[in-house]
Length: 331
Ligand SMILES: NC(=O)c1ccc[n+]([C@@H]2O[C@H](COP(=O)([O-])OP(=O)(O)OC[C@H]3O[C@@H](n4cnc5c(N)ncnc54)[C@H](OP(=O)(O)O)[C@@H]3O)[C@@H](O)[C@H]2O)c1
Image 1 (cartoon, rainbow, N blue to C red):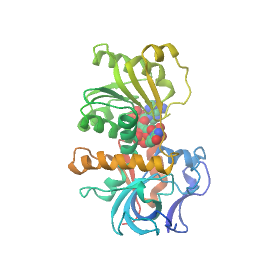
Image 2: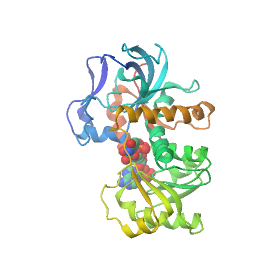
Image 3: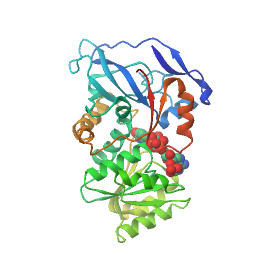
């Protein structure tokens, strides 16, 4: 089968489309014919050699999410019939014509979504849903800061918060363009940070009449930590999901203790198969129906053919994307 291969670590020249062996579905595993996959920051790191695939996943075929059709199944797999339209996340290997995953790592694609739209969903929406609701206990009427609100995960979070009756304040680094566009997906308030994180803490205070926000979905990391603690209301929850701007910062214990804050770190890729299955089950129950109704929409920045993988990586590295980059895998 054709697959994206990391021939050597470094720049985009290390990426190629290669013929590799097709994986076999055994036990409770299912082989999916991948129609479209999507790109993630993790792929950039993996390409550079800084984020190896977890054990049990192909070391040199990237790809954390996919949409496609069930093609065959192991002897113990019961849930899916050949031809079922499915999407899901995996620890690697999805940027290929076939991917093999446990049957409970799959969810049915709503009929109104095409392959490319479906491929833009799993990583962003499962991450945002799991962080905001399963871990952050976001409730109706609460207020949330979503950092990097024009990102794939950010736009999923804005829409999910809105669908659940919460309000959002989105941030961007330099310009308001992406935030203006995010309004169409339900963003309520916006703040351009411009290298001074105090800007969003001040904006959050003004927005909440000094009370602070209930939840922060942080995709940015280190440089926002102090302002995040400042922006939170008593018993606020800080969800650490990404480290775009660094992974180490001093922590003011008194602020955390005094406000009784909760800091939760989360990552999907390295979770056990059972934990991924649980996150996928909750996503299938709570998120897919909203996609089916059009209350949530996949946001696609651009679509690339598998052959143009190098250009796709360059586009993601440009930081200009709004939503997801999708790869067409099979027609
Ligand atoms: N923990 C998990 O399980 C999990 C799952 C998925 C993703 N993630 C992480 O979540 C983050 C967002 O992922 P994504 O796929 O949604 O991202 P994305 O769509 O690639 O968007 C990232 C955006 O963040 C902003 N940004 C980039 N570098 C930044 C910096 N140094 N400081 C502040 N903002 C910066 C840029 O927008 P502006 O310049 O417009 O602000 C950029 O377009 C990544 O770190 C990713 O690795 C974690």
